[in-house]
Image 1 (tube, rainbow, N blue to C red):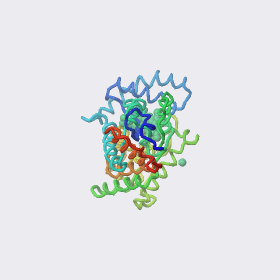
Image 2: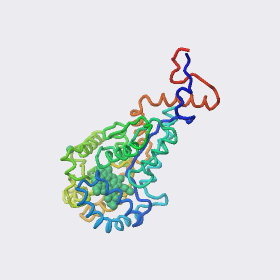
Image 3: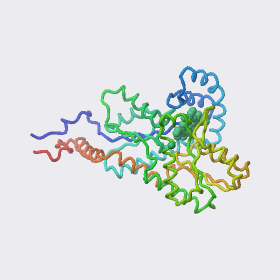
Image 4: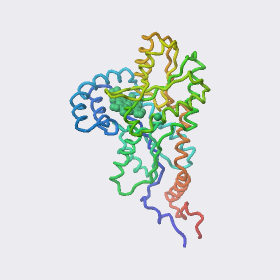
Length: 370
Ligand SMILES: C=CC1=C(C)c2cc3[nH]c(cc4nc(cc5[nH]c(cc1n2)c(C)c5CCC(=O)O)C(CCC(=O)O)=C4C)c(C)c3C=C
Ligand SMILES: [Fe+2]
Ligand SMILES: [Fe+2]
């Protein structure tokens, strides 16, 4: 007996699609103190970000940090804010649009690339609901952090699960855990450094600075530190660098505990005394430029280096919407959606036929006996 499309039409006439949920950290809505207070409150209340007993932390956070840090951070955000708003948000939207174009070509079927932020807007729950509305029966979550860290990737997944716990009909779900050693990502980083060296004199040292985390997290088993080192080694190999031509450091320390060492700021202050007065700095862990690269690395750390006797300091931008970066992310999406593209294309054909009033044998069952 024939099987007809309406037998499978659970979706009430809506077309189905594959959804890709890109997630980055998030950014305040505006560079002012109230927006920063809201943003930092959400961010720093996350137990995956600050792993100390809740009661102790609540006293410090509400008693001290949320009274002092918002104004200081707002001033820093103001210095990087553009007419397009927060750099992190603007660049993330460019990445989303470029990936939408690229995946439509690769998928040959309905695919929706959505962007969410772990903290602030657009939130993960609201973006998942949009994907649901768009008919996404398959969702791939791609956190835009190449190196896995509980404070970034795990909390992204937590937030996805928290929302999905409330749904009756769950989509098929896949997660990208990390892509710190993906050949396309390493190639994009290496070519970005080469392009920089074509237009700028090459420094004596390529400093690869990654966002820090507390050292305790490493001792508890977080793979982040090792993944940063692997990325750095692969990048150095791709560039054929000798061992003394590159170093790994960790930036953006927060609080009084020890974080991953060596620290970026202390290293830059010490380099001129070692005879290293010309450096190139790259932040391979940041998929998009943001406060931590544009202000802390490009401006603040340059000052430390120059005050210590450094002469030339070049910051090599994040991969942002560089076409090779988009190709690498598209490759990662393609690899993690194996088997989905065909289904999406078939559903697309079936849906078009249905909308045109044609009753057809279901496309995914074209081999079925008539
Ligand atoms: C409190 C502890 C923090 C941990 C742990 C942490 C880990 C971590 N963060 C990123 C990426 C980004 N962090 C950014 C800003 C930022 N980070 C912290 C604190 C921790 N981060 C704070 C308080 C802030 C806000 C700014 C400030 O007040 O100093 C950003 C930039 C966001 C932007 O809007 O531009 C990014 C990106 C990673 C990858 C990471 C762990 C590996
Ligand atoms: Fe951070
Ligand atoms: Fe390690």
